[in-house]
Length: 214
Image 1 (tube, one colour):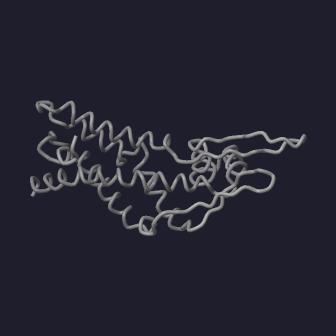
Image 2: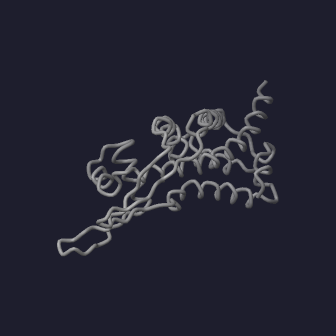
Image 3: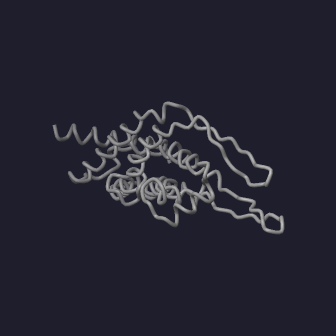
């Protein structure tokens, strides 16, 4: 389904003032997100290396920590499945208002659902987990791994948004070099493109509503 079709105001039934406000706040949040320096500075790079004991590690370069921390909070609102002005809830509003008398009603609703699914499953397609080769007393090495998803969870809930001690300990053990931050940056950059698609869907609808109210 073309995004152009989904962006046509005439395919939706009238919305309440509260719903239009949510769409307007979503649009404004996405526009605000684009102004952060994080999106103007290109992407981050990672240096991978291992020491002579065989422990795989990661170093980082070209990492704008200040820009990252500035963008992560507004990003979280847009990404939160339960946030009233987040991407998932906003596209659900659109789905609920697709006109049922349209021949392609089902296809339109499915397309909006697919957009939500992409946002909700992004963490399942993260690029990198971490495996440590841990030296044993007998000199052998035993691998201990953490998935990219669990690494992200350790950063979000053990460092950035919360201070859960168990997850902080996981982050310190598996990721002292900050590899998980690159995973998070990857998600932010990927989903920002999806948020822009959502903004482009609601913008014509909001313009049409403003004309009707004038």
